[in-house]
Length: 229
Image 1 (tube, one colour):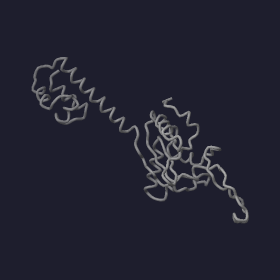
Image 2: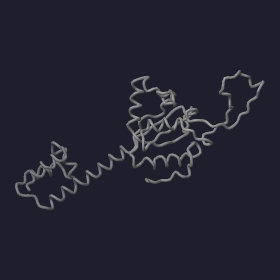
Image 3: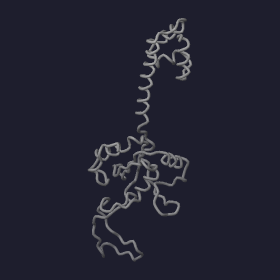
Image 4: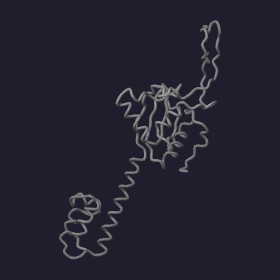
């Protein structure tokens, strides 16, 4: 094979138009490519193998860099939660996706991706870390917001009557401050969401939980292990 034929074939395969664009992928200089063009005799097997090897190494390096760049991508950070009843008023949703074009776009993005999410309280402290691997971030986050987790999400509060009855001031009927169960919807004020490649979701969640075990309300944190199973 002549040098001209090989260079043209590589340009076509790599979608490059000029010698300058092609040179980094071959691991040689633009001047060296010009020399190959001028050769009318056939290239040796060693020259062909060298070009292929350089091309393969560059392609592998770019693939690794691309994988790292896209493994974890922030979708939104510290977005304020504005509780809105779902269409059938069965559960709370994170926000009203019909309130603005921005909100609608955010919901669409959360519906399109899997990954990791974090809920924060009103002070911006992380209180819960979760993952969305089998369903979208939107579905999983709304589910977590409404999930009953008895004896896990508890705060010192006053338990007030929920049925229809007359108000009695605390000075007349003291109510004790006791430990009460709460929903994430009761205490979460902001959320962040990250698109994560499926193969990294488990380990990313485990890392976050293990880094902040005393701040989070996650269940069975001791079972969060670094595994891709």
